[in-house]
Image (cartoon, rainbow, N blue to C red):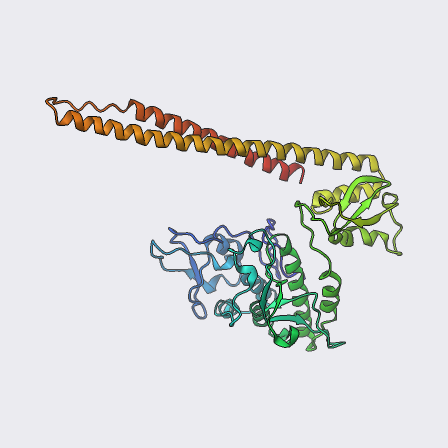
Length: 428
């Protein structure tokens, strides 16, 4: 197809087979909104809320708009999150959209899914420190893997929790039973390779896309053929996921061009995607790739020079033109700019923390001054004086200093945001 796209996709691509899926602004629980939408036709989906942005972007100009109505006002003390921000909900919507299903019943089926005794997907536990940094926590529970129909063996390179398998079975009923329990159903330690966040999200979506293609083909032909899905999992599951702009930790292979571009390093995933096809017997290898080799990663780790569209464009241009000197300058300039921006942001963050502490100190001193002025006023009021000589000068002075420091901190935070945007727009 492809069936799904990463949630950070910004370009509208609504078509006959693809809805437009933009980032949801209410993925976290929030209060004070009375503009929620709900699915009401052909039957109401209870406790399923859609924010106005998601409705306008993904439903309003589609055949499903008539299935959705403005929901009743929420109590002021009730926090809600947009249910359409959830990955499985978006996958289900994209599937029913592509299959031209007449209504949104599938979203209701998903919303009513309950975890089994093993609980929800471990990757959904936002309080887990591993999940917080975009990783996959290892948990003891019953796990499932795809079964290769040609051999009957399980592909243990990919493991999925029961909650994710239930979602797949609901969205793609024709794929029911393609996942089988690992270790005869015994509880073992493993991680879920589905519903991942962070840098792993794209791999998750690619797996789902392969499942969707298998389901679509089976729907069209009446025969379920898992060969493409099985081959895809065998190829990619053992390959570590590119860490993007983050450091690739020691222990993973790094791929280099020591004789032509010694500054260059790439991770295994990006090498498989962008370099190995150029080295296939069917192609004439670019001169830039002379001496291409793999080596153990540096003890301090390394950064991948192929993770972003900009870096991939640099690499493709260098392979096409053979201009290694230009490519080296591009990589060096980018590295130097990264060092410069990181240093500036680190300094600004440190200064910002100091300013906020100073602001809070002046706020505390303001409270002391206010208390002293109030006590002085009480002393006057019990005496013979008829006036009320409040002296707020010390209080006002401390408040002014607190506001000044807070404003300076806010300016620094804006500067940090500007630097981050500069990096994204011009260098990432």
